[in-house]
Length: 186
Image 1: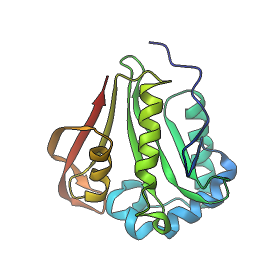
Image 2 (image 1 turned 90 degrees about the vertical axis):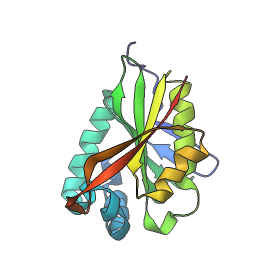
Image 3 (image 1 turned 45 degrees about the vertical axis):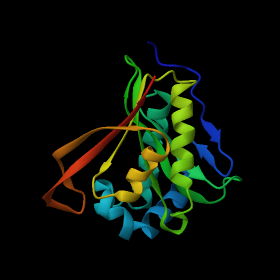
């Protein structure tokens, strides 16, 4: 299957705006990441050594190019008027031959516990099964991350596997961890 040219650069949910990365979002992203490091470091490898502001600009420039080339489809999650960054989500591990993708997400600490990650994952699941024509969508998370694991359950995903000793803990590379692999197919 060819890569769909009509991937939207913006999506709206009842409470959120999802928008493709832009270099001019660097200050908001940098601030949200740094304010959320105590929580993010437990689960995200990239949070162990967070980018400075110039590095964030470079990261967003590359993310925008990868979005345009449909290599990854990262969306930043904003309040409805696009003035406050709530988090980040999107598709990675894309395989347009199947087609399929994996949804990842994080929410800035001040906004956790409000259902935003579930709302975003629902919107991306609908986009994937609709416009993008995915036959498989996956969500993976550390087995210990109970909050993250509740999201695919709530959206009707199936737990396909527990991948034992699949990776190392983001915050302690000496500790092995298990990965939960959820999917929805059509």
